[in-house]
Image 1 (cartoon, one colour):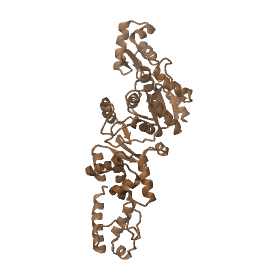
Image 2: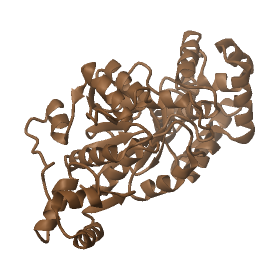
Image 3: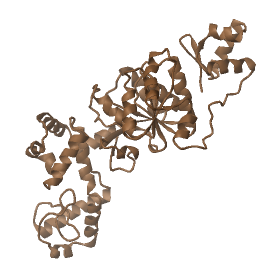
Image 4: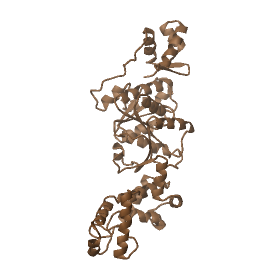
Length: 434
């Protein structure tokens, strides 16, 4: 733990006084009743030494009171260190905490005693991980290492831990964070879907995310390629807040091509959370665990586009288990990437075709729909082009057939609208930008 400079001086002076009066090795501070304290601030058996207490100046008594108020911090660093060892997740940590509480051991005793680690039921691999960690770091030096990497830690007891996530039974007890600071409880809505997004999936995701961001929603997703990344980008483009939930530690990236977008998202004010310590590599089993965080911290989950076996359906089912609203965006009936959303709708998921559907279902009855808000056009042709492409993406030949204008004029107009940020090209097709 890092103490302020003044408190460091008090700590050393306090130790000197204890040496003078007790002739012992530096002990833990006394409670206000003169009883020694363990690392957790819990009293241990011993005689009350009122003579010592009377001789200690008031400033050192005040320091002891301060110590008792803040005693959780040394244990906090141990909690973080235990999670950081690898192989010890929230379920194992709950088992450790229950054992220590039952038999009146401290976390510090557990940390130092291999025999106690075996008694708790840790596997040899987990015990070896603790030893390896201790050969590289102390709990405090590990926190400093995290700070050097600009990684913050949020424990489930902290005020900035997502409120909704606290109420799920299998919540992660620790989250590692990178990026901007903003309120995670400000209308968090998850947008998930297939990794193989179609032009249609991209278009509807961008439109609905932009509408939700206008109403100050925080967009949460799993930071994979496909719908996840489209949702994150759309939130940033609309000037909103977005959170990427990772299935690995911050020392790694999966897939590697996401590295640039990771840096871009940080630079544009995005946030990343993961329950995995920095050294954790991407593993298939990590991503369903990530999905429970996406579902658990959000008011609602929107599935934008999904095949029948899409992993986004795991997130949707978890959301239902947690009592969250689940929305599915209908897609073309001929597309295999609509099969997952069709099955959700058949099972009773909420239908969503715009931000208004979602906001009203969440209880925002007075929400003013903005989906039909159109940009300013320089002429009638621009408006016609935008209205056609706002419903579906098209190539220039199909658009020319509908509008019946000169092909060269249409091509020039599309290019100008792209420069103005009204349209963008995806392959041979053109799409509107909300």
